[in-house]
Length: 242
Image (cartoon, rainbow, N blue to C red; front, side):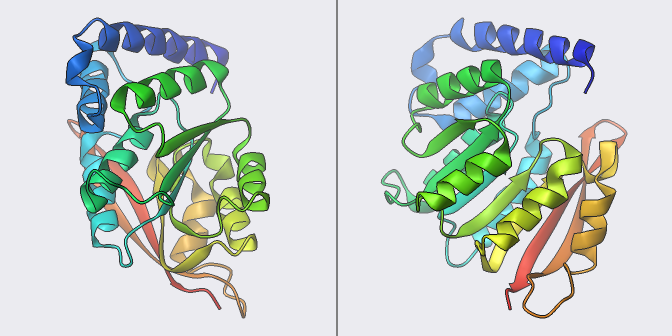
């Protein structure tokens, strides 16, 4: 992403904050779906943002709702303004009810300090700050630290929506840390555009294909993110871990 695009998205993030907090906050408190939908509305009316839109989210939501056992740990690579992280928290609440078990968590990774602050603020507004955690810095370093500290010992879903060239290395880091289980999900956005060819080739082939490696079954879900512009969500299910 070039500097002009970074500046554009930074400006829109400021505008998003103004948009959310100019409205009565009572409608958002302890209501993550309301916050997520407000972010979608802003993106539709104020210009494109790098968010996981409603149609794509429905694909992921259906996968998580059907997962057995129910998801307890979700990793997100690329928080941006926090929209999808808030949605993961809302989905987990829908699955477990208002009293989500204490060991259920979403960890989302973000490099940009401005986006980290905004995502945390919106997550706090949504009332899910005990469930959804924004970690600042390179995703690989944050994940290894969580693993060392014993906070992440298994991953039920990994969502990739950061720089496409890091999709495959970060997926393989999860493998190397032995965090996937049979039935775990790897869900990736933007594999068609801008494109993540190495990642896509890897999961479509079923993984490394060596003895003892994680094996995947992968399916592409095509959605229409904007009129006339199809966009793919790649859903890869772990079918074996040894």
